[in-house]
Image 1 (cartoon, helix red, strand yellow):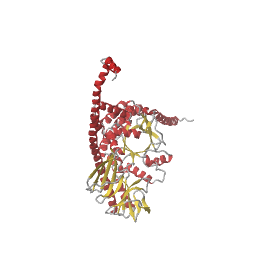
Image 2 (cartoon, rainbow, N blue to C red):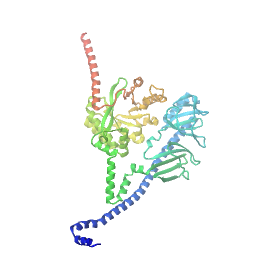
Image 3 (tube, rainbow, N blue to C red):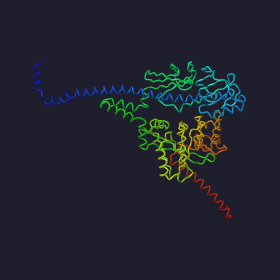
Image 4 (cartoon, rainbow, N blue to C red):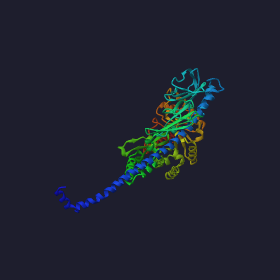
Length: 564
C-alpha cells in the first residue's frame, strides 16, 4: 500500500462514511445465513412435500381405479347377461316377439346401446334397426377372441349412428356398450384405460379409455410406475377378466387436488421463501377463472336470460328457464360460456353459490311477474351437490317468502348426470317435491341408461334432449326413439317438455302427439331479459283479454237483441 492510500485510510477511519457502512457489514452475514436457511428450508419442504404428494397421488389414483373397476364389472356383467339371455331366447330367431323381448332387455339395461342377433357373420336384427335384410356385416376391424369364443371389437363404427362403441358378440348374439357408459366417472386430470379379456393369458382388448394394458405378475396384482413425471397404476381382476390402468401427470395432480400438500411444503421454507411463494401463489390464484368468478358473484356481474316455455298446442307461454350468463369485466368483456364456468365452480366447490345467486336473481327480477301470473313458472338449474346442501333449501324458502310466491312457481331442473348418485338424488328430489316444487329431469335421453330407473327418481317433468328433437322430420335412425321416450313418460305419468324446437315441422310433429306437450326453442323464442319476457306475457294476456272482451260484447249484444 502506497503512502497516499495509508494516508486516506488513516484519515477516514472512524469517519461517518465508515460508520454508516459498518451496520451493512454486520448484517451481511445474517442476511446470508437467513438466505441459506431459507434455501435449506425450501429444499427440505420440497423433498417432504414431494413424498407426501406422491403418497397422496397414489391414494387418489387407487380410489379412482377402484371406482372404475366396480363400474366396469357392472358393465361387463350386464353385457354378458344380455348376450346370454338373447342366445337363450325361447322366441323364433329375429321374430317380432324376439325383437320385443330384446327391447325389454335393453330398457332394463343401464349401460347398453343395442342388442342384436347375428348369423353367418351378419346382423340379422337388433333392438334399434329391427329386422334387417341380412346384408349388414359384422365389424371387419380388429378384434380379440377369448377362450370361450367371445369376440370383442373395440371402438367399432356403429351401423345406426356416426359414433363408435365397443361391441361384444358370442354365439348368435351381440351387444353394443354405450360409449358414454363411463362419462360420469371422468375426472381430470386422471387418464384411464379399461381392458377386458382372458387376463391370465393376456388376451386383452381395450373397451374404454386410452393406452395399452400392463398385466402385473401375478395377474391379480397391482403395478406402480413413475416415469417422466407420470404416475401410473396397473391392476387386474382375473376373476372378472378386467384390467384397469390409471395415470396422471404429477404437475396436473398438483394443480387439481394438492392445495393442502403444497401448503405443508411451503411451511418447510423459511419466512422469506414462505412469504414470496405465498405472494406468488395468491397472485396466480387471483388471476384464475375461479377467483374472477368469485368476484363476479360478489359484485353481481352475472346476468340472467329467460328461455320461454310454451304449450305446444296453442303456443302460449307457460313458463321460462333461467339461464345464467357471464360477460367478464376483467377480460375486456369476453363472454365466458356457462359450461366452462359452471364446470370450474363444481370442481372448486362453489357451484352452490352460483345456484343460490341465480335463484335470488330470478326471484328478484321475476317475483312481480310471477305474482301477476299465477300459472306461470320459472325453472332453475341445479347441480348434484345442491340436492344435499342445506344452504340451497334455506335460500329456496327465503326466496319464496321474500317474493310472496308459491313453491310451484319455482321449478327445479337437474340433469341425468346429477342423478348418477341415485340414492342422494332420490332423497333430494323427494324433499323438493314434498315442499311443493316441480322437478324436471333435464337432457333426458343423452344417457340411455336412465330408462331403467326413471321411475325411481319420481320427477314431475321429463325434458327430452334437443339431440332427439333434431331428428324429427329426418331419416335418422334415432328418430324411432322419440315415440319410445314419449311412451316412457306416459307410463310414469310425467309431463313432457321438448327442448330445441327450431322448425315448423318439429313443432307440428309434437303438437300432433296424443298427449299435451310443452316446448322450448328458437322457433318459439330466444332467451330474453326479464323485462322482455314480462312484456311478452303482458302482450299475450292483453290479446287474450281483448278476445274475451269481444266475446262478452257479442254475448251482451245477443242478449239485448242489438245488431250492427
